[in-house]
Each structure stands twice: as C-alpha cells, then as structure tokens.
Image (cartoon, each protein chain N blue to C red):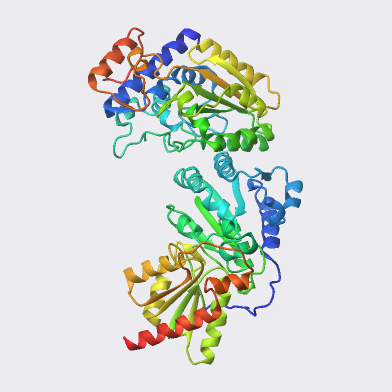
Length: 323
Length: 278
C-alpha cells in the first residue's frame, strides 16, 4: 500500500507551477526537449519560459492541428516535444493528426490536455471533454494518464521524455490536492493501492481520487471497508491489479471525470468481465454534454460527488451480499 | 546529372510507376506521374542522401504530403538503391513493405502521409527543428493542389513564414484535378502563387515538366535565402508523360489492366532506361 499524505488541504504547489518547473529542469537535463503551445501559455503560466528559452519553447498561435504536425516533424530531427492546449483542443480537435502523424508514424510526442471534463468550469460545454480518454485509448501503443497529484505529474513528465508513440496527460491547472508522499515512485502501467478494504474496491482516477478517499472514510464510519485504487495510467491499465481486487472484493466501483463510455469505467469493466467477472458500477458522465458552472455545481450535475460514491458503494455491497 | 540524364531518370521513374501499379492492378497513377520530373530533379541532382544510410543526419529531407503519390517516390528510391527494385512488385499488396500511401517505415521515406494536409506541418517541424539545432540542410515538401483545400495547409503556411523557415521549399503540384473533378469545379482556390506570397512566402510558377526550369528555380531558392519559405507552383498535367493516361479525364485512381500497362510501357520505351521486369 502507498504512503499517502492526503489531507484535503491546498497543494504545496499547483499543477501549472509544477509544469513550468519540470519543463525548465528538462531543458537543462536534455537540450533536445521542446515545449510547444497553441496560444495558451498565458493560461498555463509558461510565458516566461517562452522568453527565456527561445530554442526550446515555441508558440504556434491558435493552430492545434499544425502544432501536432510540427511536433512530429521536430521529433524526426531528434527533438523531444511536449505540446499543450486545453484538453478539447489538444485531443478532440486534432485527433486524426495525433492518430496518423504521431501514433501511426511512431513519433515520440507528449500531449498535455489541461482542464479536462468539469475542470473547464466557466468555459462551458464547448470546452468540456468527457471523451478525451475514450479517443486516446483507441490509439495503438498510446499511454493515457489521468493526473491525480502534482508529484505524479512531475515524475511522469520526466519519465516519458523518450517514450515512443502518443503519451497523453490530462490534468487540471490548479486545485489538485497532494495525495502521494514525496518518495512515491510512479511507473507507466502500475496502479497504486491507497487504501485496503474487503467490501468493495473503488477505482478512481484524476480529480476523483481524492473524492474516493473521502468516500472511503465516510463508508468506514458506517462499517463498510473499501479499497481505493488509482490506476495512474488508464492505458496501459494495470490489469493484474484490477483482477486482484476483483478477486479480493468481488465488487468494483469506478469513478472518473469523464464519460462512462470509453474511459476508466469501460477499461475496468472490459478487464473484469474478461478476467474475473464481478459486479461493476461506473460513476462518471452519462451520455451528456458539458455546461457552464463552478466545480461544485458541475459535480452535482454529473453526480461526481463523494455522496454518490458512498451511495453506489452501499448499493453494490448490498447487491453483492444478495448474490 | 545533366538535363538529358534527368529526363531519362524521370522516364525510368514513370516506367516503374506503371509496372508497380500494373502489378497491383490499379492505383493512384495520375498524381504520381505528374511529379516524376520533379522527383528526377530532386533525387538526380539536388538532394543530399545516402541510400546505404537512409537516416543519415546530414541528409536533405523530403515530405511527400500528397501521400497517394508514393508509387512515384518509391520508384525513385528503388532506382537510387534504397531498396531492391523487386519490392515495387508488392506495392500496396497485403502484407507489403510498400503501402500505397507514403510510409516512414520504407527506407528513404521521411514522413508518413496520406491523410491530406498534414505533411506541410511535418515539414515545418523538420525545418524548424533543423534551424534551432543549427543544421544547414534543406527540407522539401510536395503538396497537391486539391490538398491545398485543407485548412491545416494554411496553418502551416502561416507558421513557416512566422518562423522564417527559409530552409523549407514546398512544391505545389498544380495538375488542376482532384478526385471529384477539376479544381475549378470542386473548390476554387484562385491564384495560389499569390496566396502564398501574401502569407509571406517567396513563390514561383514553373513548367512542372521542364527539368531545367525546375532545377534552376530550386537552385536559386536554396542559394538566395531571404528569411522566407519558398513555394514553387508546378504547372503540371495529371498523368503527365503518358498520353493514354493523360487522356483519361478522371485518372486520379484507376484500374490498370495489362493491356493499358503495355500501351503505357510502349510509349515510355521510346526512351530507353532501367525498368522493373514486367
């Protein structure tokens, strides 16, 4: 089990701070690392890097499709691109470019999609991606990471520097509470056990990991003990870990800031149904578009709340015991 | 190579395009034939490359953004020794080493293309990557006229000018036809040379089948760098060099039965050269 430091307090560092710091460290460690943005440096607070590192940082203007192609071309010359935009524009808008120019052509490009799902808040439905993980999961050899902690983001940005193919990070820019102890080691395809209990396993990713931890505590007070798992990478999924907890708890609940179609819930359900079928409940967005709202409002709207996790776990445990 | 040798090389590329597509029974012949003279100039005279070491770091790069013209590129590469001529016989067949659209896994191919509009962005990334690393070679890119309908082309056009990518030379194969008909009937793009100039590029219009004119224009663009990318509008004929193909109004992707193959080769055999055994 992991050593976690979750308190629910504000993080020591926001994601955007970690992003800038990590890029800067990468530029010093490896001069072939480049960062490209499509006119959202001000949003990601990276404009100072643009001025400071003219050989490593480039702005394409509002050209997400071109940005992907430029990244592919730069990689052919030996550079190692990290590209950023808001999640809908980084994925949905230029999916064919990602699929062909990066994926099919076996280039090495890291894509950072910020403010996924309800994190788009006031930008509303046009900016709200509930499908980005579903799309990216279908690209052969792609890696899909739903960031739940700043330390995880920092470490995996560095570890994927030379990874071939599409590597996709989805992350809010701020407000992600610290979960993991500083010494935690993250690896592609290795999930984390944050809590152990035999009644059910709650598998949550991204911003929903902290909600799952809160729910687990409330359930504990009611005498229900659940495991909490963070898959870290939704693709490749830690299949063995998922199977192990299906066997141990015989009841799985998935929680994601994403559509229940194609994302974490689908990936877990596919794995469980093939390896060790047990009841699976998927918490996420049900076949709906986004809308304007603050995070609390959107969590209520799309049932991404701690209460929803508690209720669904209770129902599932009851159902399991009736079988 | 002198101009006569380049013309013979172009003829050999055409013969192999016909043989390769003929073996498959059909394919993208029109737009392959329209760029054979350009390819003969590039591979015969202009570009630095090493068939023994296709990924040589000092090479000039070529992105064929109109990926469906791969048969012509593959023919040029085979003739220059990047891979055995026999590979051309398996063009676009199941399990092939030579997919019908340009594929990076083929020795000598720098970019995987075929989803139109993406190659110019890739070429921009190569050109920009070379510049920031202080590497002096050139990047060549071939786009189709129909391909210039794509919005991404114009994103890349703005990008190349903004970053002063004067190591980038883009050829626009103006053969005036696309799948659904003549450019003028499908999507009028107006004066493309002027459009690129207004985007901040140098632009030239040349006869795309005159090897001397193509060669001199490229030489000048490579030599006289002025901080701007260069676009060379190649005035071409779709199916060029083989009259029986030129005469087919819609010759973008056609069946090539044995009889037609023989007719094509008969016409091309008026000029002697090397060819895949038919």
